[in-house]
Image 1 (spheres, rainbow, N blue to C red):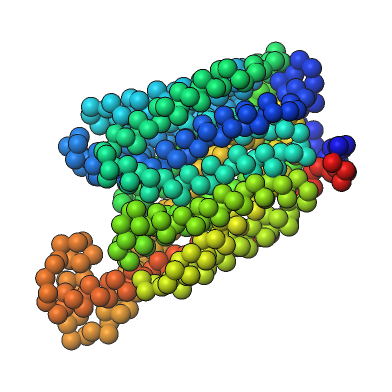
Image 2 (image 1 turned 30 degrees about the horizontal axis):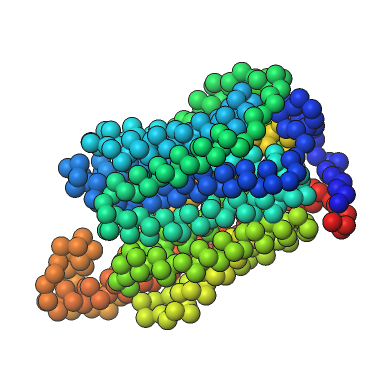
Length: 530
């Protein structure tokens, strides 16, 4: 098998770029079974971290009762994890240079496992929040350092296949997390969703310690921490994510959201200013001159809307408007999880053979259309309308993710791979939070508009309708008054229409990312001999 790497000559060389070689941070890729065993070790840790970010939400009501706290307080169990993991991700590039892949990955996995044990033993809300922060600091680093390890182990012409296999856990985890969490909570108790991580975490740690080889560190990569860049980026991420996650409850025009938006803008502007002037930046801004990196960063946000649009809206629709239980909803969503799980390795192999432009374009179109098709969904829809778009969406997400990751990582110097992987994950995290906030707001407002429009057809009891509609929306009316029944019926139908609008809007957002696909360029050519 012969391989020839080629990079677009228009792409600039960046600060700190170097070729891999003896004594460098990135030695020549391993051959034989070693890399596949390490890939399995990395996949296991990544799947655990991704799964835990979504498995907890269904158990929050049980925790609220156990700790004797209200809804606003218990939300910090999820919020603390989201913020801590987002802050940990940008440090991965710098930490890899200081510690190496193996030590950083195993340390992150150890922190995650220890945090899981602390969560299972938490005796109060404060203890749970501290434990979730510990868990998130490890879990937030696992995914980007895992991507960097896979890129380091496999040559450019094989990275697509490897990243496709590794990325299966990233795509399947959010889909099965709520169902698994609901099952474990109903069958046992909420502490089991954390303690189940312990045997798998310890086993993965032992395999990693025994099998993974230690990195040969390059002293030139032991750069000082860009403290102010990290500080301002963390400020922007924390303020932005807090604003997005609480905007619906606080009100998008509230002073809370305005302060979060101002801090986000200040942090982002000062981060860019710092990165443009320091000698060893956290993120080398010249990377954005590489088309594949800049396009992949932007498309990661669009992809997150497509991923979380389906994962967020569909379960709520099936549970709240159709009446399925959490377990039943999970079974209905399983075909989509299986589709993306099967497609990821196939898409990875295709990414090794064909330019990313057309693969990603196909993925964007398929995922966008799958969400648009859900615009026809209603509580009486048959299995075909529930399952078919999921399968199409799974195929599309696979074709988006594996080629995008491969294109971005193959286009940058080896010394920048860890940094690029961490910021790709940051972009997806921010895109997911933005997508959920945007779609949640759109569905709420669309539901209100449709309810008002249909309520206008009842002029004779418009005052009573408004009163009872408010009661029904607040969940406090259970009478059999004709106006109440009318309000319930109208609000239910308005909610269905609101969700339909949300699905279509999510699909249109994703399709709006199509022009970015044509910025992707081939980065690797190879002979057809194998």
